[in-house]
Length: 159
Ligand SMILES: [Fe+2]
Ligand SMILES: [Fe+2]
Image (tube, rainbow, N blue to C red):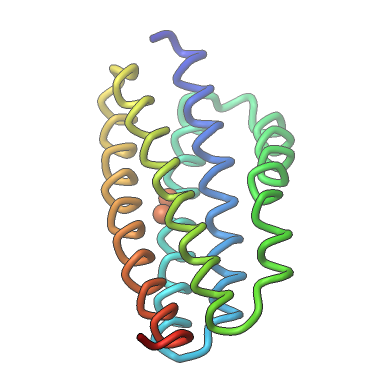
């Protein structure tokens, strides 16, 4: 894998992570109780840590291209969130938030797959370290979201 493929992977994951920050901040604002507010804000914080880690590597490896990264990541972030915006706007109440969290869990699964694919191709150990850490974080997010979404759906429609 040449340097361009490393750069492509970093930029792709940066765009994805930025859309995750925005998504969880949006969901936290809709959360009905303190535990979910803190939980979703915590996810947003962790995704922001992922953004910062990837940005740091981009700056370190490609120091003269920073203005370019801004354009790429901003346009991709808009695309990344597009699928969610209609859902976010129409979701109502506790059941709606449960559906959004299920959709977020599915987005985490896609992020996990993207990280796995990148790790399979990248030899650079520093990038592998970061991507493995992020992949494990995304797995924890996925499990947390699935659990909390199920609880919310139960609250909205008790058996
Ligand atoms: Fe992440
Ligand atoms: Fe995540």
